[in-house]
Image 1 (cartoon, rainbow, N blue to C red):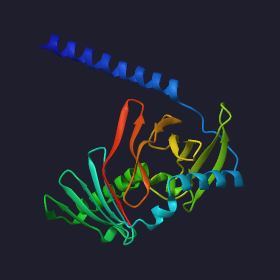
Image 2: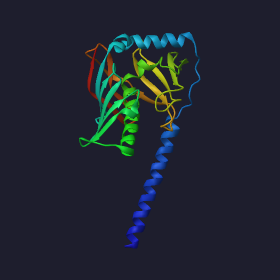
Image 3: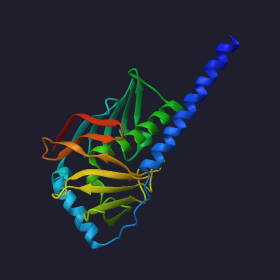
Image 4: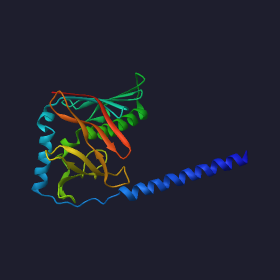
Length: 236
């Protein structure tokens, strides 16, 4: 028995060391310093070009959005009333975006209260902020607290660096938008607090034009992952 435990212990140690080495390898391969860029009217013009490519005018008129994120979280967002139904597993939160404390929470169709209720609301807010960003981030480049900079790439192309100095769940995050000639996003690089590797690139692809006339991405490739957006509905 002792011999078996020693073997298991050695195996776990080898696995842990392997994971550490892989993590260090990924870090040194992919990690990039945050580019400085330059705040200028040119940056704002590039941001406006991206907004035009994603039909921001139609997005502002869109009153209802529904989608599933990575097959795990599900959303029904009434933009006009600023309320969203957030669902995962057996939990359903009727989230009031402007006044989260007034939100209601049910688990297995039974309304809950007290500390568990506030914990579920907090998770719903964090999930919504993250999962909606992967859907509508291009429309948030002029949000209050944003800073926009022009960054010149090695191939001579111009890219748009957007930093969120306030707001959301993780203020201070930065995203470098890589754009098609039309202004439509094809990818961004991230410098975010929840990921220790700076400059990780995620694609913005498989665009589909919704009923409201707004194109939305339905897939993002990040390292070895596919982040899918399914069951998308957008109505004016």
